Length: 128
Image (cartoon, rainbow, N blue to C red; front, side, top):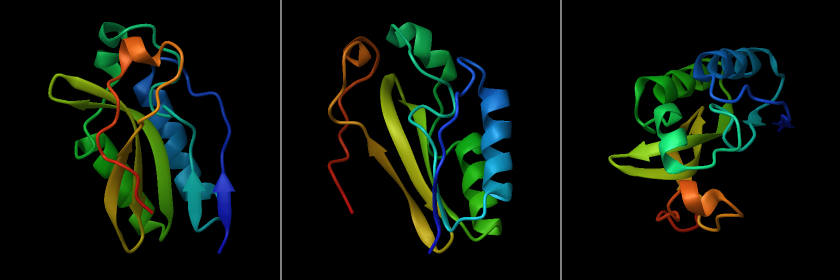
């Protein structure tokens, strides 16, 4: 099994560009599992919930489902950090999805520094 851990600088507040980069890496990186950075879809560092909310995605929305479909088509597993909106609640989350696995979302439990002003504590617990 080949694992790739990508480190790059997502463009802050530019979902379209970041999603294009992510899709490109899913197709081009020669690995079975690709791990993207925290908040890879939106960039980092929001100072408030109101600032982050326009860049939040639903884990089952078209953008994230498009990434799941791309990963499955490439027979890869991806872990992608994103700002997740769940109704009026905002989480710093990671989607784990792809080839032969059902999508799962981890919502960050232990927030750091100013994340307390932006994201709620996660409610998914810890899973393997």
